[in-house]
View 1 (cartoon, one colour):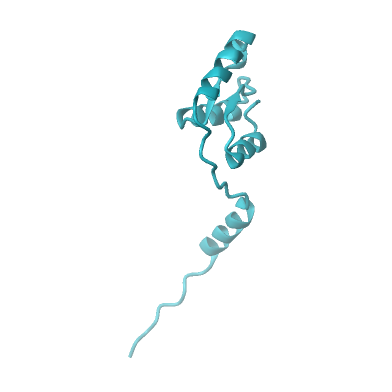
View 2: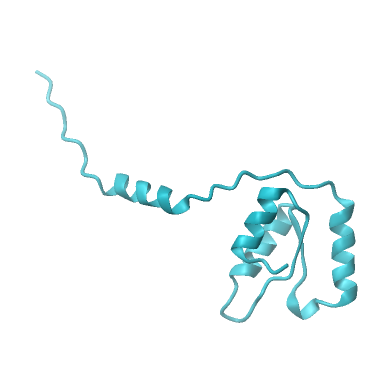
Length: 101
């Protein structure tokens, strides 16, 4: 698969072995960065688009099939709600200093 956000999250949440061929251009690096990070963590094998051949794909599939299935990752999917909460907390005025007599 390519290394789009949704595809990668589904793979992590289901504990699937992944072979990633990220979409990449000079200005589009998001998928490549994600794929390399997952490969470095042992969650995927990565093939660059320019290096994709039937042989390289078969080799990557063999590599991931020789590994045990990865641990299922509990990915938090409510990032927007958490971000709103964090921003509200940061933007809230500081509580007034208490004066003790």
